[in-house]
Each structure stands twice: as structure tokens, then as C-alpha cells.
Image 1 (cartoon, rainbow, N blue to C red):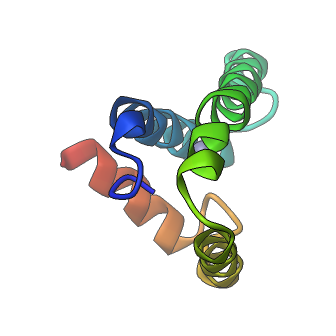
Image 2 (cartoon, rainbow, N blue to C red):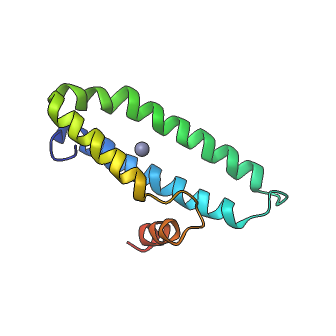
Length: 107
Ligand SMILES: [Zn+2]
């Protein structure tokens, strides 16, 4: 999408950072006790941040992508997303999820 819709470059870069923050918060929460002092506050920040993120994606840049790409390209992207879901980490303590968070921190 980044290559196909140069207009949303800044939105996508911001989106990467929001994904990164969510990855870090999920990893931290997975390692914490729910009784910990900051657990509820961290959970609230995660929820608010993800809600804001989804809203921005769905209302700001998905419409631009929908406008810029043809039906066939959109279907291909949809299929890629379905394939990616199969291999995506499903638990923040999974090594692949932790690696993603660490890579984002050091890159
Ligand atoms: Zn996103």
C-alpha cells in the first residue's frame, strides 16, 4: 500500500510506531501480574491507543487506499492479510512477538 499510495506515507510511518507501542505494551503486560500497580493503567493506555489507531486506519487511510487501488489489487491484499494471520504471533510471550518488539526497539 505504501508503494501504491504515496499520499499516505506519513500515515503509514505513524501507524508502524503505533503498532510498535502496542507490541511493547502487550509484551510488558504479558510479563506483569494483573495485581501490579501499573497493570490497569497500562491496559487502559493500550486500549485507548489501539482504538485511536483503528479509527485512523479505517477513517483516514483505508478510504484513500480503496480509492487508489482496483478491486483485484484489494482482493490480493486481503488474501495476503489472511495468509499473514496464519503465521502472526497470537500471544505476546511467543518468541516471534518478543523478537518483533526487540527488533523495533533496537532498529
Ligand atoms: Zn494497524
